[in-house]
Length: 119
Image 1 (cartoon, rainbow, N blue to C red):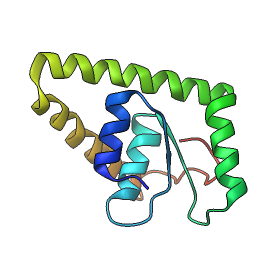
Image 2 (image 1 turned 30 degrees about the horizontal axis):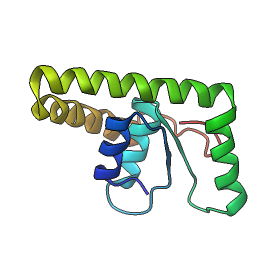
Image 3 (image 1 turned 120 degrees about the horizontal axis):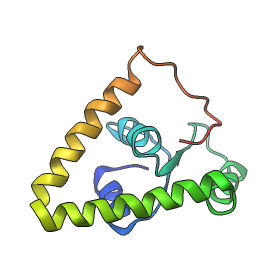
Image 4 (image 1 turned 180 degrees about the horizontal axis):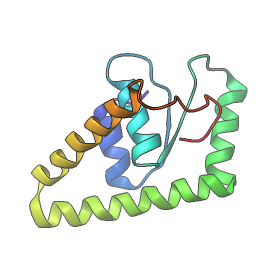
């Protein structure tokens, strides 16, 4: 699941995400996490045990997973600096921009990424 609060906590802590969007804004959140911020993997709807295991292994053991983990730490550092400089409002502006970009990514203007690809 990719609720906004879980997303914030993961970003604040520098934790990469495995996103399984189910309802509401979770699809947009997952798209932002995987395709805008590039700090996570988006799971397809038909979730099976082996797919979860595969996603965890890709995130923890693959070269691409290493890049995702590195970006998660870098995003944490940027958020930390932003909070020191401008407080919560700076983070809110980043979230609005991320949502706008996420809406664009979900529109027909871009080709949908493969379900099996990394975010």
